[in-house]
Length: 305
Ligand code: NAI
Image 1 (cartoon, protein in one colour):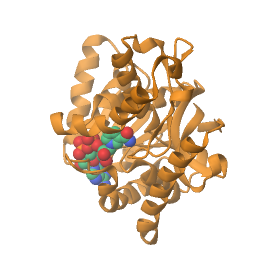
Image 2 (cartoon, protein in one colour):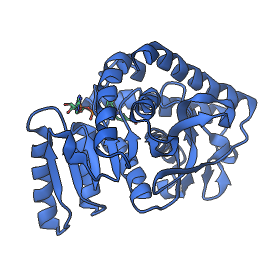
Image 3 (cartoon, rainbow, N blue to C red):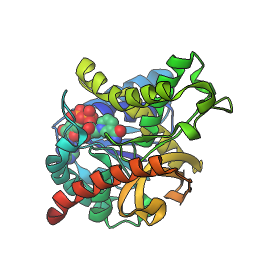
C-alpha cells in the first residue's frame, strides 16, 4: 500500500496516478474533513471503468496508514504568487513535525517521501521526527527540476524530450544546480549544442518556471505528481533507478548534517547508494550556496524540533 499524507492538489494527483497505473493500493489521509475520502471515491470510480483493481481509501484517520510501504508527505501550505519556498518554513515545519510523528507511529517500516516545501528542510524534519534510518527518508525535488530543465532544452533545441538525459542537483529552491556538463542530447554533450549564453538562459528559465505556473494556474501539480510517481515506482518495484533526490549527507559532496539533492540509486527501502560526481569550482560553489540556505533554514527551526 502507498500512503498519502495530504490529499490536496499534489497529493491527490499523485494518488490518482499511482492508482491508475495499478502500482499498489492507495490510502489518503488529510485533516480537512471529507477531502481524502472524496478524492478516494472519485479515483475509485475512475479506475472502476478503466479496469484497474487496486483499493483506494481516504479518511482523516492517521492509523489507516498502517502497512504503507511508502508514505508521500504533501501536508502543508503551498506557495502563492511572489513567495519563495523558504517563506513557508515556520508554518510547514509545525505541520510536518506533527505528521512525521504519525508516520513513525503507524508505519514504522515505510519509506517516507517528503514533498512539502521548503522540501530539503522539511526532509530533514521528517528524518529527525520519524527517527528512521537516513536511507528511508527521501525528498522529491531534483526529478521535478530536471523535468523543467528538459522541457526548456527541448523547446530551445527543437528535439524530442526522449532524447535528453540530464541532471539537476542541489537545493530544491532558488539555488538549484542544473548541470549542463552532465546533460546530453542522444549522447551528444549539451555543451556542444548550446553556447554559454543559451545555457545560462536555459538555467534561468528552469529556476523561474515554477513561479510562472503558480501565478497562472495557482499551483504546480502535474509535473510534481509525475516526479512523485517516478520515485514511488522506483521504491515499490525496487527498480534501482538513478534519480536526483534529497537525502541526508554525511560528508558526500563536501556537505554534512543536512538533506540536499544528489543523484542516488532508489529502490526497495529507499536510498541504496549515493552516486559521486566531480563538480567544477563554479558548480561546487552553487551547490554549497544551496547547502548554506538549507542550513540556515534548519537553524531557524532547530529549537522547535
Ligand atoms: P494543497 O493546499 O492543495 O494541499 C495541502 C493539503 O495538506 C491540504 O489538503 C491540507 O488540508 C493538508 N494538511 C495540512 N495540514 C495537515 C496535517 N496536519 N495533516 C494532514 N493533512 C494536512 O497544497 P499542494 O499544492 O498539494 O502542495 C502541498 C505541498 O507540496 C506544499 O508545501 C507545496 O509547496 C509542496 N510542493 C512541493 C513540490 C516539490 O517539488 N517538492 C512541488 C509542488 C508542491
